[in-house]
Image 1 (cartoon, each protein chain N blue to C red):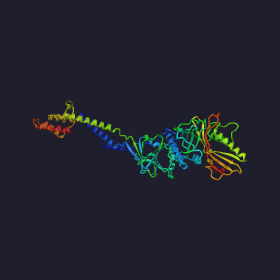
Image 2: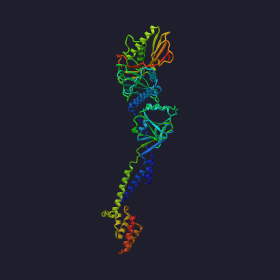
Image 3: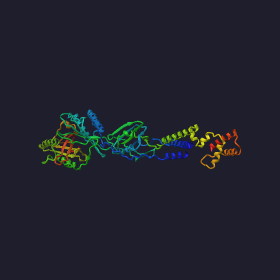
Image 4: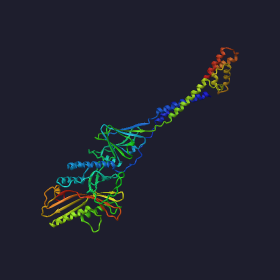
Amino acid sequence: MVVAASALLALAACEIPLPAPSVTPSVEQPGALLEPQSTEIIRDTLSRIASADAASDPKLLAPRVGGDAADVRAAEYAVAKAGGDKPDALPPTMLAVYGPTGSEWPRTLVAIATAADDTLTPVVLWWVQDDPRSPYELREWAHMLPGAIIPAMPSQTIGDEQLSLDAEGFSMTPREAIERYADLLTEGEPEEATFAPDTYRERMFAARKALAAAAKGRNGTYQDTIDARVDEAVVLLTAEGSALVLLPVTVTSAFTVPGAQLSLPAADKALLAGTLSDRVVHHYRDFVVLSVPKDASLLPSVVAADHHLVDVTLKVAS
Amino acid sequence: MIRVWAVVSGVLGVLAAGAGVAGLIAKPDAVVWAAAPLNRSVVVIPPQVFAMDGVQQIVVDADAPMETLMGRPSDAYAWIRGETSVVVRGLSSWETVDLLAPGLYRNEGDEPSTDIWRRDYASIGTSTLRPEDVPAGLVVIVASQDRSALGTVSIELRRDPGFGWAWPVISAGAVLAALSLVLFAWLWLDLGPSRADESPTKAASTKASSTKAATKAASKDESREDEPKPSRRARRLAREAEETPPRRGRAATKGAKSGDGEGDDS
């Protein structure tokens, strides 16, 4: 009996093997931003914009609205206070939301909001998260151009793959598309079309032509300076294999008539600091969404773009 | 022979039952809790820990209100670079959670965004996490909201303690002991008279009435080792019986009884 009991105790003393954390389960939904997360980000953003709109106070936009979007909204408040147009309407209903994937930062969230009314087109909104501890921040928005179609994108559970500017497999690399479109905006329409027609550049060229003619009639000058901010551009791979390029563009328009006393519309005056004389510079923060097709026989096109006035100064450097 | 079987089954039964009971006493607990003090404001629980065999729940306790965050590993590990955290690596023993405390980071005191988290919720006192409540592959982070040190992390585990044979052995022992009792009872009640003649025990219990029986037994015992030997007293009585003619009377009967009785004991 004693022997048996001793044997049992010896058995009991033997270690039961410890479980080890050897299995690494894979994430079922690899997308970095699932629908509930993006819904909350969009809701919070629009809520803060509504609060800021009600008070015409751009400080209330933080931390959900920043960068160009905050500057544009602040300018819109100033213009509206001076009797100009109301701020752009950003409808709360989303037609589509495209979330990121991968493990790198900055990350991008794109949403397409419905048109605010029958006279307008849907709005493309672009959020950026700079690092894991920062919030997604609305940086840009632009209305879709009439007739434009945004290519199908992967679902949020998978997420959009972000490409480098030099990614190949398209009619041209995204970087080439940006550079060529910036050249196009600077130099005007070339003899041979490199981009599909779009109303954004048509309006820009029309305004440029009128202002240049007005300046020239008084021995003055008019010059648009286009700065495509390539370093801030983001390229997304669409579901059909094309590239969607999100491109912030800074446009500086300088109008000079030596010896003249220029005047401005009331809305523009609201953004002017100083006393106007013979030179005025308008600063714009534009947002352009380019579609670069996979098929080399197709021309790249602009699917959304807005020309946002943010400042009016007496010198080129704002 | 039946007596042998009764004794053997009785002994085996008691031994088996004793071994089974000893096994039950020595058997480790099937459910155990391993724990460790955290001493840091953020604890990271990787998905591998939730996937370990036998994990029932993981409980983090703290005095301060806590926030529990679940996210993709790449997001969570990027997020904790700004925190002074401790990582649960598994178990160092059945009683102790294995922790890894990376180097200290300075917390800037900012209130980080919760955008990257698939789920986040606040709790007070304890945060209880069951594997079935955590989507596969996600990292769980529990952090005190005021970034004071958390209390402890405890893992409840269900394991196979072994000793599964204890109850079957106890049952077998009980059966053997019962069988032994039945055999002894059978012998005691003399339910098998035909066999009693074959058995020395039975022969004794039938109270053989003559001293000759004892005498014969005593004399044959010397040449038959497999039969019980009579005691010295029985042999002495047998010699006396041979030397003096048998008398009807109490002495012979008494002596036979006495000799039989002692022979039983041998």
